[in-house]
Image 1 (cartoon, each protein chain N blue to C red):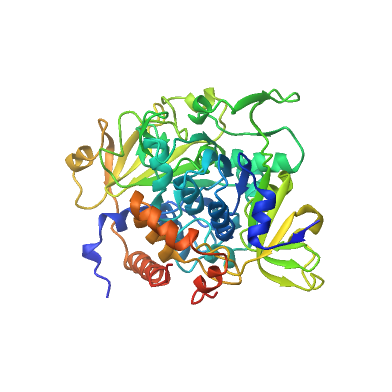
Image 2 (spheres, rainbow over the protein chains, first blue to last red):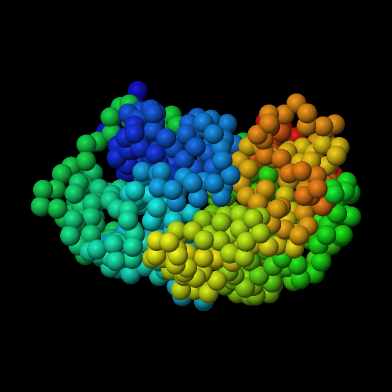
Length: 262
Length: 283
């Protein structure tokens, strides 16, 4: 029996993110938390959602979460698998993706993301993996959802590098650069749900998860947090959502553990 | 015309010090055995191109064979950072390396442009992105018909492409299945190519007519290396060895441990060990 009262903040984050996706969405999925959320959506309220991973798999329905964006499981369960140039040219650049789902190492209040370096680019303190598909996911998908755990290290006043462009300096900065898509429209953390202010585009807390206080949201965020006037409480996970997520994670652990190594 | 050779011969004949080489594979079909042969032969001052540098580039960089890396995502897939590559970038060990960084879209377009014989790739990209400010190879071009500002990057034209594939026919045609990545484009963009395969079959007569096939006259060398992608996987043959990827995080974290591992598992071994490494991982 699933105990509904002791869900973790991470589980709440993944489930809240899954709820933002609908059956009609064509979603470009990043690895990690976005991948879990997209697959929970597919296994609960959005069975016909189209999930696309940048390795070229279109309409994939993995039974376990992939460890990387190119796992065989994604190809085996996909409607079709295309080459990587075709994926980026016809499908992403062609404007056929409704939602890009990204994680972030560093994020600012306008949804700009850094996954490239901590410190100066030419003399980095920490060299991170880099952008991969993110720069064009951020500009070519019709809208972008971001999911990450809150921490002052990650949610910062100024990011060290603009790996992918959110709303820039806010306002109509995207339009001024000739970007025609909406950019980040939703941020889901382990504590809250955030949406950009319609004018300034600054992320604003619209809903806090159960048991979370304003102080807790502020303590784990590097910028001065704005809260919506009609702040809501995020509905806690349902039994179906929580069971689906836990079973998916258990299957994943079983599938990826216990292999050999050299 | 494709020549069937030993891995030692194929690498010695096709790779030279100072070459620009693309070892491609998008998580799937990564040519580990071929990369290990390059390390054994000590071919150096390489410029490496790869969308997703992973363990094999970490190994070549850690062994001091690399001068420059052109890439879009450098990580141990599903695990984390590349520790040898980071050590080279952050501390210059064992030598400093130059990096040229792109997005996946730019890299994929650059391979396609190379395969198409074009000097550059044009695409809608890098809008508002910081890489434009640190990589002078990212430029703008104006569409002569609509006036839209688009991104342009130079085509990839490697000296050599190195890939792993499922099958070659006796004639030397090569079949790639599953997540096909940019391997076809990489081979067609390169002057020479070395392909390792799981299996050599009589012919491709019974295959579906639209599969990803490289005709024998586009491939320079073919080597039969069963298991040659391990710990990556070969669709239809064996699964990814996730434990080995996790183990690499520990091995690569320490310079001495790394050097000892490379001696035991690469320098003192040959391509024949790969068949054993995939036993128990059969798909």
